[in-house]
Image (cartoon, rainbow, N blue to C red; front, side, top):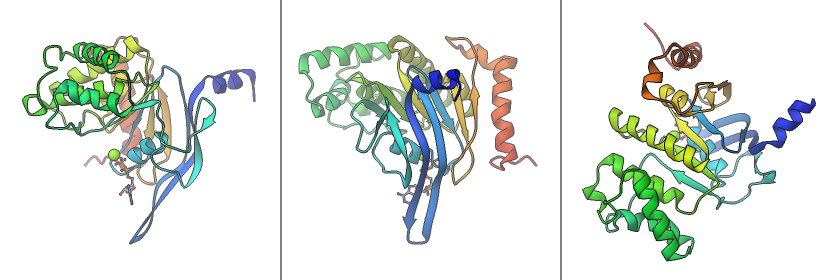
Length: 267
Ligand SMILES: Nc1ncnc2c1ncn2[C@@H]1O[C@H](COP(=O)(O)OP(=O)(O)O)[C@@H](O)[C@H]1O
Ligand SMILES: [Mg+2]
């Protein structure tokens, strides 16, 4: 190993090593992930993009310590993960809010589960809600909020304990295009203010390119890593950047991989 390689390995925060996952089903075994290895630096925004069924959610659940791999390992700061991680925040496609709790009450759920100091957590929840444009909506109930607002609440809930690592599984997949654009911009601002390390899963090429420092392109099932692409666009990224030749070139690279693997077919 050269000196540069060792330095790069030292910087790794999350390490995924030769991960395989096989599910046993009534119809036999389903190999969801096949020999996945990559690492993530602290502060890095890393996305996985791939077709439905390629094992993205499985990978996220294993990285969270919520699902055991069939073989291989997950390490965080050098330590092997063998139980659910408490240092993470997770956001799923569906915000899963409690109908009978206000926006603030829903964010506080996570604080209560972790037995955080109530006063401090409430102050932090207020700041978080404010920072995603929900100042003044603290006492609203989920049915009084739009889909985008509900997802913002679930992002705040995931961040109330200042997690080291934010894991997001297609968080904007259920939103309309405009709301999605806004949430992508909001997430970018939040991540940069808080210097967060984010593992982000999406099937949207544009979303992956826009947000990421690196994009991991997955193959169809069994999910393998096809290529890892460095996105060297300057930050902060703007919506107008999506129209630039540089952005188009990154999108094209991913699109070409999807065409080559039969994920997309042109007639
Ligand atoms: N609990 C499970 N039992 C059996 N098969 C599963 C289970 N979870 C996922 N799978 C299968 O594993 C593959 C990958 O699933 P998933 O990780 O959800 O992919 P993605 O999130 O990329 O759509 C799919 O073929 C899916 O049907
Ligand atoms: Mg999924």
